[in-house]
Length: 149
Image (cartoon, rainbow, N blue to C red; front, side, top):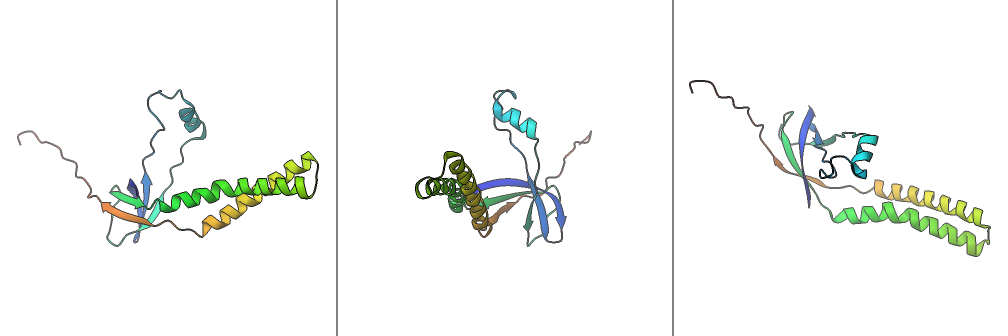
C-alpha cells in the first residue's frame, strides 16, 4: 500500500479537492543537482485530486489516502514497454520482411513507437486505481496563551 497525507483545498458538495505537499527530490545539495535544476526550470504544477466523502470535511483538514500498489507494475509495463515493443516490431518487419533501407527502417520504428504509445494510452484509460480513505484528521485549533492564565 502506498499512503499519502493530503490537504483539503476546496469542497463542492460531497466532493473535496485534495492537494499534496510537494517534496523536493533531495535537500542535501542545496539546489545544485540535476533534479533541483529541472524542478526550478519546469516549475511545480500543483494538481488537485477530487475525492467523494460520506462525511463532511472542511478546507484545511488533512486526509490520509492509500493506493493499492499491485496494479502500478502492470500500468508501468503498458506505458514503458508497449512503445518499445512497437518500435522493435515495426523496425524488424521493415528490415527483414520488407527489406527497406535504413532511413525507412528508422522512420518505421518511430511509427511503431508512436502506435505503441497510442495502444498503451488506450489500454491504461480503462484501468482504474482504487483510492481508499484511511483517516480523516480533525482540524487543529490554534492555541494562544493569554497573560494571567
